[in-house]
Length: 385
Image: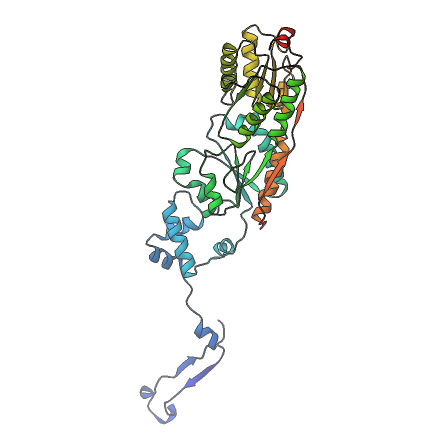
């Protein structure tokens, strides 16, 4: 038992030897606590937080542990009450003082095979390797309509699940990207950018790659060139289409819209687009495709239609998916440094999390990889106007 800091005897009774024992007044011992102890306020308890917030103690506990069963509205109400009352158990104190979670989110489109896609896979490999080396964990999320509608993308920050988010596979039509910018949450758009919103981004140089691809085809004598593209609302897709049209105009070559078709970034879409272009323009001698999947579909259609590649029709892709270097004919394509892009995206996001204030806008160079699917224009086409 701890001894009191000081004590005094309050003995108002007379000497017990002179009086009857039954009439002796009780001796009282009073403790004089230090002044600072007397002024110390009572510690706020979790029960008080629960009472003031109108929830149960269990709910407050779940809020502090970021339990996903708690609704966003309840979570925010309890958090505000915790801050207002100053309730800070050790773990919560660390959270509210600005400590990092050491976790990053990667958001992907709600595509069925997104995690098996070679394009996404290369970028994710770069992100995962870099994050691991820097001691960060990754949380993967698909931006399904309900996820966005319920504000779950914002809860990633508001409920301190992550320090920042990398947005992969999105473009102008995905308006939720602007939510991150508006709230100044650390977020980096990967391999695209928003033309009218100053969101941070890292991207491959699609314009440079498209220029190299078109220069290659024109130098080989091709003038009747089709374009298989996708996501026309995307800045990068518009850059490719702009280069395609500009170079054809400079070469006095046909640019009518029926030579351009949406291939939906898929093998099947690429095959269908190639069929439509050649049906409308049998004189087509080259196809420029916005990604390797669509190029693979175009190759498949051309083979089924009895067209030889590259003797009758040349094909260029974009991505440089490695296994397409081993198909026959091997695919000429624009190499995108996707793994390096993932590494860069992770680095730049962490810079933003740690306080970098300058706008992040990084572009990685691309280059054309020449293989077997491109060749000199057939003589009959070279002689045609």
